[in-house]
Image (tube, rainbow, N blue to C red):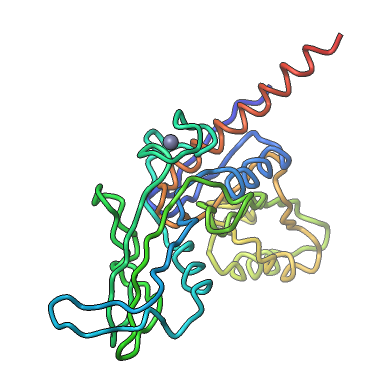
Length: 284
Ligand SMILES: [Zn+2]
């Protein structure tokens, strides 16, 4: 069995760049798919809009509860706002001890109370209670209010996954790429001058020609552009995908850190395989 090693290029709040050695394309793809579809987070699911006139108690002015957009459009935009999610604190409504009635462990309430003329921003979506659950991108514009227009609404965020709706998708731009492997075998008729030209053709300067020999200095930096392959007309150099080394890259929307998202994805993958193993074991 090949040992799996992970080299971390970056693993920050919103970005991950890793090299995974010793796994197959199928395993890398399973990680990718789990990251996209099965990592849970909070997102706004229900929005209750106040209907009818709204009176400003201090000025006595009346406002229409209407905006420049349909309520459905406003609700969709609210759903896409990233909410910081602590998975040790929140769970799905269906898995909660409240039996889906809604409690502080499975839902978060927000309120919006703005009067025009103004622009309603994400920062106007205020959590009721815990201030650490404030929307992560406060300057995202949601809707514009004209004079005499107002928006008064209550929104409820619940836990879901990208499998149900993209608004619950934590990881974005998830990509796996096989690591390029540079294979050098000098062919007959290939001159020193040709190999020198080949080395010089690399845009990231990882080829070196010295003492009549072409070598790779830092293979991990190869950008898979195949410029060297095209330069040497004798076929002395080939770039081929390494079948057991993969780069994994993804961003998160900030609701979970890249490390949390990856840890959850791997744990979830293991849980599903474990369930499968048990099911297979149960076959008489
Ligand atoms: Zn609950």
